[in-house]
Amino acid sequence: MRSRLPKVLHPLAGKPLLTHVLDTARALSPTKLIVIIGHGAETVQQATHAPDVEFVLQQQQLGTGHAVQQALPLLDPSVPTLVLYGDVPLIRASTLTRLIQACDANNAYGILTAVVPDPTGYGRIVRNQTQRVIKIVEQKDANETERAICEINTGIVVLPTSRLGGWLAALKNNNAKHEYYLTDVVEQACQDGVEIVTAKPEDFWETLGINDQAQLAQLERIKQRQIASELMREGVRIVDPDRVDVRGELSCGTDVSIDINCIFEGQVNLADSVQIGPHCVLKNTTVAAGTTIHAFTHIENAQIGAEAVIGPYARVRPGSVLAEQTRVGNFVEIKQAKVGAGSKVNHLAYVGDAEVGKQVNLGAGVITCNYDGAHKHRTIIEDNVFVGSDTQLVAPVHIGKNATIAAGTTVWKDAPAHALVLNQKNQVAQADYVRPSKTQFKGNIE
Image 1 (cartoon, rainbow, N blue to C red):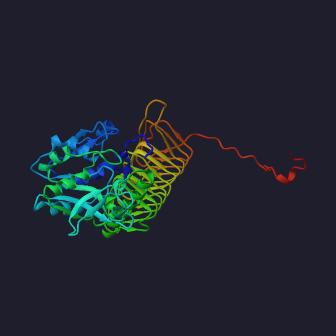
Image 2 (image 1 turned 180 degrees about the vertical axis):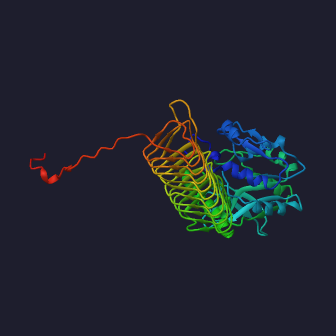
């Protein structure tokens, strides 16, 4: 991956690769969940720490068979062992269930295989004349006949645990990479008369692994298309499923519409009839029914009420709560603020660390001056207040109900209810003023 970050921690759809695999494993209700760690072991363990996960350290990376051998003391011999890979994040639980069920009857050895047009790089499934699996041959160790085989080993297997210790102990590393291959166990299982069964995934991309940034990007698009398809099946209108990214969990009500190039991060909930315009970013946000979010709006860790209208080009920052029928317009920033029902902040304003009541109108260029250089202070604006354009509210300050703040006022003292607040100013008008004209200048310009 050419990165300091361990491969299995690289994000796919907003979650580390390994987290995807663990979530799928949990869906199978395993009796034990064991993660074998090697490169970046401490970082991986800290990032994926969970009470149901046991970690085993593989000090030297000597192959897949050697890796499973490290976990052997923790395995329960009375139940089969399913081997998954931390860099194969898209495997479906339904596919794994089918493989496990194929093994259940006779305590068989199960292999997830796939038939591909170009098997280059994969281990080949070698069968005898009766189509029984007799061995798996890695690409580097295969002869010309074996390389022509198009059925490949995905690496995902179900093993009869009671026999696994003896098989692993007998592994040899006399191969091109001088590693102990888990795939070599197949030949031992055949010699011991253990039945070898196979199953195939619903889609080959389930078994794709990641070794570089290009492959990560490829699987990202597959995952995003899968998420978009599920949302559309549930009735969500997505204008272009190839231009939407869900990096977490997105839940939607009925008649939700999502335009192009939108990104949803963390936990996002869109209620009925929510409309999301193009190029919006929503993170850990709840949007109530009937709300419209216009283009290029960013909302993070906020709650948006019903029938609100947000944007375009609005930014709603963490800790903000906008009530029903609020209006937050273009180039407005809201931070750690509560805005009451029916209130409007329509143009070029900043509202931070504030409590805004119901039916309040904040004009263009209104700013809550919440920071004194060392501490944040709150602004309280009660119901039905009208604040004229280009007004500065110097916190801490309290504006009473039905107060009117004249345009261009700097408010640094509390304003009583029902009052008109303005700064005394003198306006001078000079009669017969002549505005300068470009045609009046006759000299040279250099």
